[in-house]
Structure formats: C-alpha cells, structure tokens
Image 1 (tube, one colour):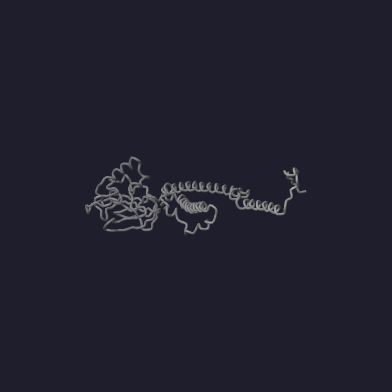
Image 2 (tube, rainbow, N blue to C red):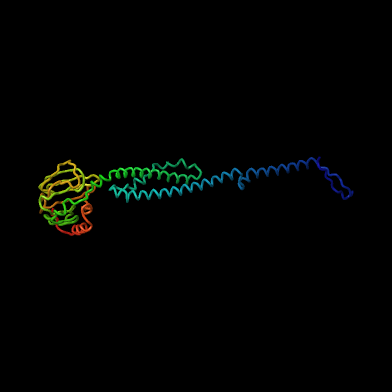
Length: 323
C-alpha cells in the first residue's frame, strides 16, 4: 500500500492530505531513472579504470608470476653461460694443449643465427622483449653446447690415441749422449759457416764421428729420402703425425727407405758431412705444422734436469753453425 503524506495547513490549523499530481510523479520517476543510468554508466565504463574485477586481479597475479619466472629463467641462462664459458676455457687452454690440438676459434663458438626476422614471431607476445632476449640466449647456448659436444668427441678420440700420440711425438736425442763430441750449434740466429752472414738456424747441430748411429726420435713414417750434393746433403724426413715432422741432415749413409714405418730408437742413418757442411755432424730439426720449433723442448725422455739445463745453456750460446 502506498504511503499517504500529510502537511499542516497553518491557515486552517489542520493536517491535510497531500495530493501528488501526475507531472510530479513523472518527474520523480525520471529522476530515479536518470540516477540509475548515471550509476550504471559509471559502473560499466568508469569503474574498471580504477578498480579491478576479480578476473582481472587473477590475470594480473598470473602475469606478475610469469614475469618473475621469466627473470628466474634469464638468470639461470646467464649462469649456464658462465659454466659453459668455463668449460670452453678449459677445453682450449688445458685439454687441447695437453693433446696438441688447435683451440676452437671464438668465431666458431660464437657463430650467428641467421636473418633479422628470426625472432619477429615473438613481437606480438606479452613481454616480447624479455621473451626475445631469453630465446636468443637459448639459441646461443644450444649452438655453443653443440660445438662443445663435438669438441669433446674429438678429445675423446685423442684420449684413445694418447699412447700412439706419445710414442709419435719426438722425445729423445737423435744421437746418444755417449756418442756426442759436443753440441755445436743451437736453434736461433747463427753465423753461416760458408756465407759468414747471420741466418736463422732452424735446428740443432750435434757433432759426432762419421758413422755414428742416428736414431728416429719418435714413431712415424719416412716421408722423404734425399741424396743431394748441396744444402742438407743426404737427408731423411719422418712424418710422426699430429702435425710433427723431424729432419735428419748431412748423413753419410741412409738406412731407411721412403714409406718405411719406424719406431722411436730405430737407426735411420749414420752421421756424415754431406751437402753444405763444414764438418761431421747431424743437423736435426723438429717441425710442428710445417713450422720449425726449438728441438731443445723435446728431449724429456733422455735427459736428467741437470743434463737438460746444461744443454739449454749451450744451445743459447751464439756461435757459428756447421751448415
């Protein structure tokens, strides 16, 4: 039942019933409708800008958790890169040095991944920059891990061939200490005995009587045998594999043929003075990857520390070579 309203008439001093007209009723209804419309507009269009719905709160919580997980993944990726970098350093500076293998160039380890559009598919994702950076890190890690895996495969083959390699690397003197007259000339700049000019002497000269046995300093295959009247004279080159070669020059007699397999300690010839030589001696060279290196570093199977020190001092003395 609708409420009945009264008002006090001061003239008649009586309460009289208030009669509400149609116009007033319509205005009241219109006011309430307008208020409802304004409130609805605020609720639908304005309220979401300032207040989150339960669904939005849940989505934001999930996005925040996603960002946290992405940052954790980025940090773990950096840690993995640090561990891999340490493995790469050990590989290049320790393992490959031990096995006489060339380091893997950084250009191979850090190779690129192709065109600029490789990661364009990620541009539409939420936190696209983070996803792109993380994907790039994963791609880089994947490439580097593949290269490192292949490197370890190669090192494993070197480990299995370690005994063969150690037997092949030149490791003794080509002439026994008891047969030596003296060490005539070492590795380095020396005065040429014929031309009397300073010239790089790429080996060591061992003086010994003609006919003294000359030994192969490591296992290998006779690569060449030359009989010449000049230069190195009668000489033998042995290929030891693993990038090593040794040269034995000015022989009076050669006791091996080209292609022959030799073992460390086998007699390959006799001391002489053939070619450009001024006296009986053996000119001996060690080459690594076709480049002459100081033979003094390869006598560790023969000499005591004291003998090595004495030979090192003699080899450093600037003197005239025999060839």
